[in-house]
Every structure is written in structure tokens, then in C-alpha cells.
Length: 272
Image (cartoon, rainbow, N blue to C red):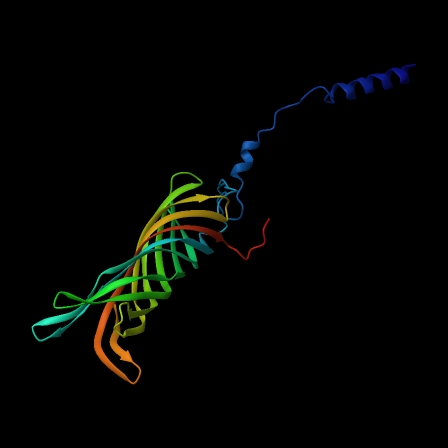
């Protein structure tokens, strides 16, 4: 009995020193772990928030498809002095024509938006109309004018500003070269003819509104004023067996343009 009593007393003593399952025990202070160095002299690393909808890079490649309407004007000008007067072409051709093309560019993330640099190529539809050939202020002949194969190649700089995560505006411009095939022909019986390929300096300015459909697709609706420097086209009297040159006359193309563009960032990256 004495041995059994000692055994029972020993069990009770052990049980009294053991933490019960429903006893939470003492609280462990984890704040001290933040003071542990990461190396011999290393400081604790800062914790930064991650935005899952932000671009993967501050510099992004993109492709743009462009389509719209050009309210184009070709102004005829130039004169050739003869004695005390001059032979000159006057008037303009006005027409609404389709234009379309594309651009490739790079977008650099900037405060409140983007800075975009791109190379753009566009083609424009044909234009037809009439101008007048005058001598000393008197009409000599009406000229049928045709401008076809219009094109332009531009380097553009655009600055985008975002109001929200999706909506923004932009402005900027560009410069480059442009051209068209220009021809003139007498409309009232005089065999006047002339044609040339006009290639000249071109420039544009514009603004618009952008709406981000997703992180990689942006819809762009914009306005641009586009213009080319004047180019020369020779005109002469040409009939079977003879040709009499009269001189060269200038033409200059300009247009107000309304465009819709779809811009795709990182187009060669796999879609997820």
C-alpha cells in the first residue's frame, strides 16, 4: 500500500506541472523577430504593395491600326510671268476621302500617363475636281485635276494623360514625307496636259480621347490636321506630233482628319 500511494502521489505531481489542453499558455511576442538581421550588417527588407493591373514594364511596344475620313483640299497655285502679265492656275479641289494605315511605336510610362513615339504610314483615296488656268486675269481653260495614290510616312510624338484607369486624352504631332500622283488636263478642248509625282515634306498635329478596353488594348478616337508642302507639276500644250511647254505650277494638299484607332500593346505576347 505504501508503494501504491507513492506512485499515485507521483502521477498527481507530474500532472500538476503539465499545461492542460484548454489552457492557452503564455503569449509569445513575435515582434522581436522583426529585429533579426538578414545578414551580418543587413537591414530588414521593406514591404511594397504590388498592383496586379500595372504594366509589366515601363517601356512597352505596340501596334496600331488606323482608319478614318479626310476632308481634303488641294490648292492650285503658281504663275509664270509673260511680259506685263502672268499665266497662272487658281482654285482648289475639295473632297472627302477614306484614309487608313497603321503605326508601330514604344510607350514610356510617365506621371499621369504615357509618352509615345511611333512611326506611322497611311494611304489616302483619290481626289477629282477642277481648277482654272488664267492669263492676265482672264480664264483660258478649265483644268480637270486628279490626285491619286496619296500616302504619308511620319514620325510622331504623343503625350497621353489619364483621368481614370481607363479614360484619357492625348496631344502631339509629327513630321515626315508624303506624296501623290497629280495630273491636269484641259476640259474645254485645248489640249493642255501635265502630270508628275509629288513627293514633299509633311507634318501634322492632333489630339484625341483614349479608352483602355484592357491592359493591352486601347481605343483611340482623334482629330488631326495634316498638310504637305507645295510640289510642282509641269503643264503644256500637247497634241499629236508637237508639244509646247508652258511651265510648272504648284499644288499643295492639306486635310482635317477624323480617325479611329485600335492600339495593341505587346502584340506578340501570348494572351492569358
